Image (cartoon, rainbow, N blue to C red; front, side, top):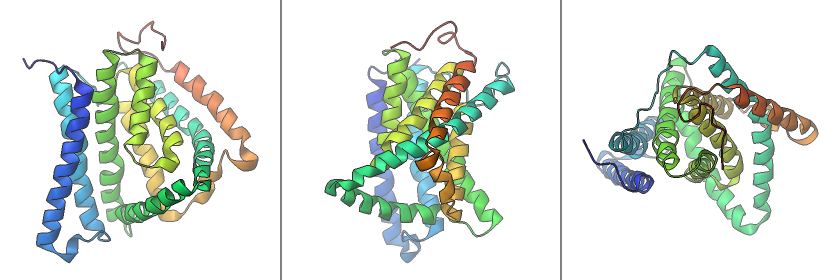
Length: 281
C-alpha cells in the first residue's frame, strides 16, 4: 500500500500548477502546428482545450491524492440518501441565489478603485472567451456545451475541492474552518476578483453539503445546475435573474438566507464524522 502524503493539500496544489503549465505549453505547441484553427474565437478548439485542461489540472491531481490518502469518495447516489436530501440541497442552493446576487453587487463596487478597474477590463476580455466557449446554436451543440462546461467542470471541481482538498484538511482542521478555507481557495482559483465573495458563499454551501452527507453526488448536482443556469443566462442575457435580491428586492436576500440555513440544518448526516457532531470551529 502506498504511504500517505505528508502534505496532501500542498501536493494537490503543486500538481494543479504543473498540470496547468503542461496543458498550456502543449496547447500552444498544438496551436503553432495546426494553425489558425486553434485561435481563441474557435469554439470547438476552446472546448477541446477546456476538456484537456480540466482533466489534467483537476481530475488527475484529485484522484492521485485521494488514492494515496485512501479516501473513498462517493460520487454516485447512495441508498441511504433519501430524495429529501437532494430536495433540501436544491432548496438551499436556490435560496442562496438572492444573497449571491446581493454580494456580487457589493463585490463589484470595488471597480470604484482604479486598480480594480484594470482587473475588470481584464475579466471582460476573459468573459468574451467564456462566451465563445458556452455559445450554442443547436440542441446538439447545447448538449456538448453542457457536458464540457457544466457537468465535466462540476465533477472535476467537486473532486478537487470537496473531494481531495476538503478531506485532506478535515484530517488536521476542524470542519467549520476546513469548509471556509476550501471555499476561499475555490473562489481564489477561479481568478474572478469581482465575484470572489458570492463564489465563496456557494463554496460554503457545497462544502457543508459534502461534509454533512458524505457524498459528492449531491454537490455535483448543485454545481452542475449552477453552471447550467450560468450557461443559459450567458446565451440569453437573462439579466433579470441577477437582480433578484438586490435594490428594492433586498428583502429576498434575507428571506433566502433564512431558508438556506433551515434547509441545510434539515439535511441528515450520513457519515461517522457528522453523526451527532456539530459543525465545530
